[in-house]
Structure formats: C-alpha cells, structure tokens
Image 1 (cartoon, one colour):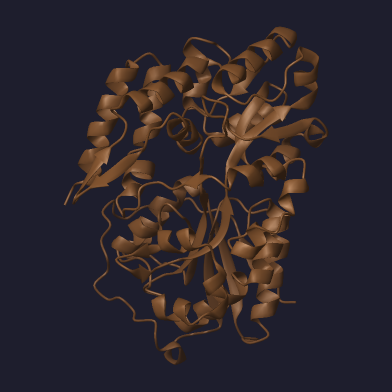
Image 2 (tube, rainbow, N blue to C red):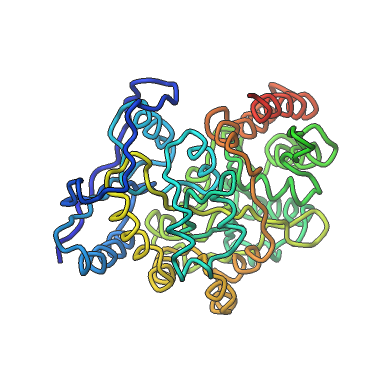
Length: 430
C-alpha cells in the first residue's frame, strides 16, 4: 500500500491578519485540467498511531478508484488552525480537503473559504442517515459547506480508587461534586479534587446549560447574550468558586486548557477531570496504568440530573479554491462512509454521526463510554452563526470571562456583563 505522507504539525506564519480572498478563485469543477497526482488533506490536531492506521485504510480504499493519486495529510494543531486558514485565504496555499471543528464551519463558509457541496451531499445516499442536527450545523444560508465526520461529548473522569478510599460515590449534583472533591483532598494530601480547565469554554457550557442559562439567543435580527443573567452568573460562580472559595482546584487552573487539565488527572495530581471520550488515549500515553483506576460519570447539573453536553466534533469540507473538487469528494465519501465512520469512532473513542450507529446500544455496556453515551442523548450546540468563531476562537470571550474571576480581576457580575456586551458586539456586527 502506498502510505500517506505524515507531515509534522505546521506553525503558520500569517501574511495578513485580515481574512482577504485572493482575486482568482478556482471553480474546482474541471478536475480534468488539474494535476490529480496529489490530494492535500488538512487534519486537525497532532495525529497518532490509531489515526495513521485508519487513514492508511482510507487511502487504500480511495486508491482502488484513483490509483495514480497520492493522499498527503498535513496535521495542523487546533490552536494554530485559524492562522493557517487565514494565511491560505490571504493568498497562501490551501488544501483540497480539510477537517474543521463543527463550531467553525459556518464561519469559514461565510469567509468563502469552503466549497458548496450541497448537490454532492444531496446525491450521496449514505448522507441521508447522518444525524440531522449535525448536518444543519454545517450549513449556511441553506447550503451545505461541510459534512459531519465524528461527534464527541464530555464527561468527568475520576479516580475510582481514591473515591473508594474517601468513601464517596460519583456525584450527581453540584454540591456532591464539591463534597467529593474535598473528601478526596483530605485523604490524598498534595492532590486536588478537580483538574479545572479554567481557560476552556466547552466543559463550562454544561454548567451554564445545567443552571438554565443560554450562551446567546436570536431575537428577531439580533443576538442577545445569555451571560448577563442570574442563570449564567450562577454557573460562573460555581465554576470559579471551585478555585477561589472551595479550593478544590489550584489558582493555576485559571490558565489551564483541557490538555493541561487531563494531564493533571492522568499523572495523579487530581481526582477528577472534565474530558472527552477521545482523550483517553492521550491520558494512557501519559500514564499507561491510569485505565486500571479510572471511571466516568456524566457532568452533573445542580439538581441531580445530568447537565446538557456540548455536541462537539468535526466536519470535513472541500477548500473552495481546490482544483480537484470531484477528486476531493470521492475521498470524502470513503472517509465518511458508514463503515469507516464506525471504524474511526471505535478506534479513537469518538461517536459516529450515523443515527443507527449511535443508537445501537454498544456504548451503554462499556464502563468508560457509558457516561458519554448518556451525555450524547442530551446535547446542545453553540449559536448557529458564522460569527461564532470570532467569539470562541479569536476573542475567547467565555474563557476570558471565567479566568478574570478566578484571577480576582473582576467580580462575577462585572465579568458576565462585560462578556455579554462583547459577545453581542461581535454577533451583531455588520
């Protein structure tokens, strides 16, 4: 098999900070005039052995139809992806096919970075079985710009042995979570009850939604932020009090992202961590023995019911300026086929995006995946607007709000009011 070329993660140098399109955009419809000897695919993250093996199998299947085409996969670290996309839009070299987070598809479509694949998608029989909410999330103005690849939700990983020593059970509400964290800390000096990703937005949303709040809602033609509300303030207070009042997470958590937090858990420094099912492999790499002593439970709401989880995941799209769009679509239909989706989800700890696969019941019997299977039955999305990427990734409004409270720079009331104003300014800008 002609193995795909795994390139090192790219550190992008941005030629222009503005999202400016080059004057000459390729239509991509006439693949016959293009050089089809190579198909460039951007994947997000760092990759790994499991993904390498999977993508090898995708290329092998793809090459049955296109034996003369080599698939070149380039990994882009998630935090560097916006700059890499901007550089390509400003005149740099873009991919033929790209992965992108499902909160960002609309934003890049609005910047005219992605090709409209509506006709291709509507003519693809397997696409009709993909979860409709995820399909809709990859649309802008009724046109399809991405196709869902995998889904993921977050839950709480915890140390089963430490919980047993402390005589506590997995918490089902906020008060129990604090009590469990304090009980474990008392038994295990030098550790923290919770590895809080204080500078990450996605786990926080479960607490916001659990408290009855919303990120933002559409009122007529305008967006109204849900942050300057009692519900949001309740969530921010709980989240930040874990550090400032209850002291079950360290002050350093103000700057932690999810990778930082999961590493704290995996290396024995914390009893609990908010993480996605797909992060188990990375934690086992940090500590091969961690799977012997971990368990999971759904992120609790304040009242004893699991909180809604953010329906995360990735889409796959075709770059608008690609001269190989037909070839790119053929690759996508292999990568995104039901069989390959099932293989990828199983090998990397994600959920597939096909309705029948998600509801098959296989996950409910898995001691780790059961909590995630519960969470995926109650999910919500970030606001469906192309400007969300600026709120989330460029301005990091939510992360800054919570970090400012943890650091003592703002009160909960001031931080939520400021964040609401900033969010509305972005979402309602023309």
